[in-house]
Figure: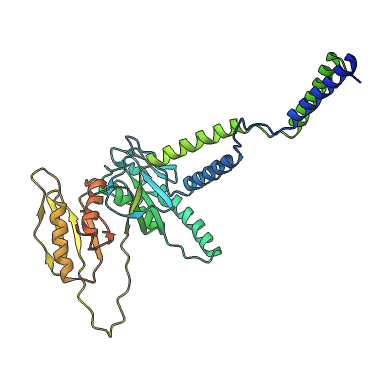
Amino acid sequence: MPASPEMSDRLKGKRAIRAFARKLAEPEEITSLNITPMMDMMTIILVFLLKTFTSSALLINQDQNMMLPSSTSRLNAKQAIAVTVTKRVVLVDGEPVAPINSGKIDPALKRDGDNGYYITPLVDILSRVARKEKKVAEMTGQKFDGELTIVADRFTPYRLLTEILYSCGQAEYANYRLLILKSRE
Amino acid sequence: MTRRQVRARMRRMREKYEEAAEDTGEINLVPYMDIVTNIIIFLLASVVNQVPLGTVNASSPTFGGGGGGGEEEKPALNLTVTVGNSGFTLAGSGGVRPLIPKLPTGDYDYVALTTELTNVKKQFKEETKATFNADAGTAYEIVIKTLDAMREDKDGHMLFPDIVFAAGIL
């Protein structure tokens, strides 16, 4: 018996809906990449780089007042108390301690005047730091090694350097790591 | 089923499907990716431009009591290298060696200093200590270069790596 036109329309409509439902249920074509694994990788690299940066020994800003000398030494820099000697100022761990005028420390800041070696504010600060380091060493069962890093400008006169080293010695710091730029020679 | 009914049914199905897709959708990570990539590039560039830093070890003079005796004592070298205005002076327990003059260019003769120290080292193979002294106006750069010349020869053999700064200056 031939289907009525109304029935035929109904069947067509149902067929079209079924076909549409099938199409929706079909897996989609890949239109974009899944970037989650790449994200994981990038995050790991980022954390690694940040860790490397924070654990690298010293970061020095060089400018016209502070140019490090170069050396053939192969020893790597280590983290320690840094005494920086620029053309204008002496700093202990970034804190200014004594100004420098024409390569000389103000005699008023020296215990024995112009010819003296003892730079009072430098000895005072380093003695305080040494006391702290000794306490930490005691608590952790280690030995206080009295090491500090000297970061000095390449034109620092030897007289000033000796005054600095003498003052460091007075605060029980007798082993120095002179910071340099590694040259390839 | 009329055409309108079919269309209405299809619209409802599509809306339902899209709602379901939205519910299970992931966070858009692309902006975060951009930020991370930029930071990584910046950090890598900083690492490449970072200057390699190193150290030269030195120490202050220390004074200790003499040994207990008993063993035969070797004569101490007490090597002292002094940087003067006219050149290097080497001194030891045995006396003072001739001055190593500056080069005609006005620079210090670091090669001659190393050669001289190599000769000294041949006689005192066990000795590693040397005292350093310099003129008041000697630049720190020259101090470091002299310490380099004292530390090892051109073939990388150790000469006198344990440097002690003299108590006082010239």
